[in-house]
Length: 447
Picture 1: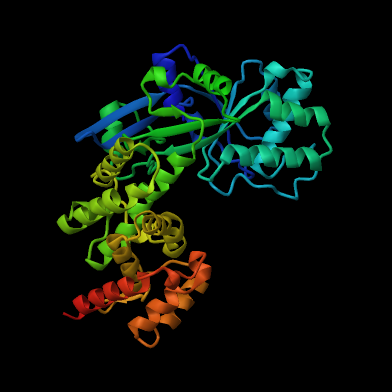
Picture 2 (picture 1 turned 45 degrees about the vertical axis):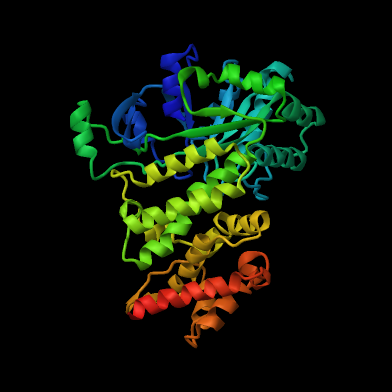
């Protein structure tokens, strides 16, 4: 987001500066301010078939505050009449209610608690002024993140016995946005930091590596013509040529991202790993795997989605290109973390929706399902697979494969409704297809 704001400052009249809130209880200093808030974003990767290698100095970060070290200064930021946005990325666990936040006069533990306290300070200082509401843009990767944040803020207002007109001000004077953020940001590029530092002429200890692709989808809540035009006006990303979309419903974009990008990752991992491949880039560059993933996405996932087909195919093309990024080493085994729950969210909906719409079964996605079951056998060609999942999941597969009976292992897995939300053996023909694919894989292993 600092990168976006820096570009807005350059290409529009946005003229924004950023105050970082670093809520670290141990009170560590923010290293960026050993560099006066300056740092570089190094974009490395492929974009539209061309290799991109660009480095940008970010100059929009003005200062940083730690509310645990200086709560009064934190609260005084709410009194700045120029303040317009609160943008957050506190991870998926950040937007949550904490019952221990019972005292409004101490620093709340939770992120929503801190925002509630900040907004109450603003409400009080500006004497309930309806024009002093803020636009809140949470970037956490949870569904309906803006609505969830607003819900928890109202919960704190209730618990803290704050006035009813404050609750009304929260809803009526502030804009909470649901968002979808899509960009791979590996962080500090330790393997290439020295090279980047030499190229820019600075000894920057805070370089951030990012892929060239970026997408931010913003849905103000509620999404009316007025609210959409307002957020477009005050956050003029489209004028700056940035890939920022202002929409009335972020849901189809989120679904497409989860099904295509995340679904392709989860589909690719077990198939590629069992073929001896270990990273996303080498997997997608493998002739068999590259063709397999491309066809799975274009022929079995895209037909289950509701955005315009040309938009979906362009996104799919972008995803495949991103997988080929030679500057990012993305290990398959790291993506394989908690693969059962990931498969349920990222791939299974495509399988079931494809069957519902076409009355056929998506063969490649079911081949990936079979490979996942074999993957969770825990060893391949005599070598242990370092599975990383919950103890319950690992214990289930240890038991399912104990007899080495394929039909039994597949049946137990597919019928385990707590994994999938339903008994998948009830889907006509699915068990037979998956079983056959498992047998093929295991026979290939023997041969």
